Length: 348
Image 1: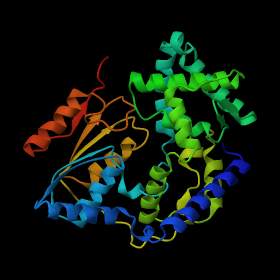
Image 2: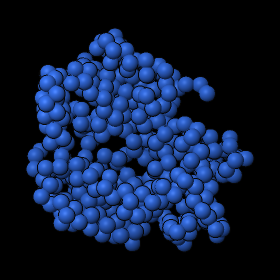
Image 3: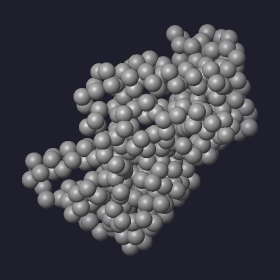
């Protein structure tokens, strides 16, 4: 949600997470960073007796690969970065400005859901499906929805929607559609047993079940780059965005606002690397402009673009024979494509 009371709740949660991490792992936090992870990687390289290592990194792993190649030049062989993070935008507010890509992904899913109205009952057109999502969000803002043993309000619902929009395939679309169907039924006051996908998403978002992942992620991000300290910075950003569905995820305050300052400065990424970059044009997490920025900064690199797919992580994940073949050829031979590679969205 974007109301002040909800924001204050997020401020308390973020401050509490930072305080808890400091209490339980304060001796480790100063050393939790991407630079130290890269150093650990190089220790492993040396222990294996390898002069150079090849590297495949997805999403955050793309940034880790950039840092490793910068800190240890000459120690990489074949480097593939998939779901490419622009290092100029890396930090605690990494998801800021991904709202347009997420709205595009939501529209793509809505088209699919409309074509499968008979199975999910969310609407026969894109507009009708999107109206169902908005009506459900509005209902959650009025009264929290009872979904199994959970209560879902308009502060939780954006997290659910966001989590449903990283994979562009019928299985993921169906899981998300079933989850929205359950939420809509709850909004109508009907008893609901959540679908497996929705149940796992609610467990992750609303309990401590996923805290190990979230805490580790926070420790790295906050240990790499400082975030704005003043909560009002985030509040003003939320209000300016005017987006009630995605901005509560992409622009909200996080634990880095209350974290101790990083021990080291952010890494100034090297000027060039002959790496193979891979990205989908509609990636809602590591958006396509980030991959284009790294391609410009690294003239010796090549970019494999998957067109017209709202997909996060492509190689070996999405099922593009074009993209997979380009990466496989590079890994097998060590030779980059002569030019950038454009791959069409596979036909069903």
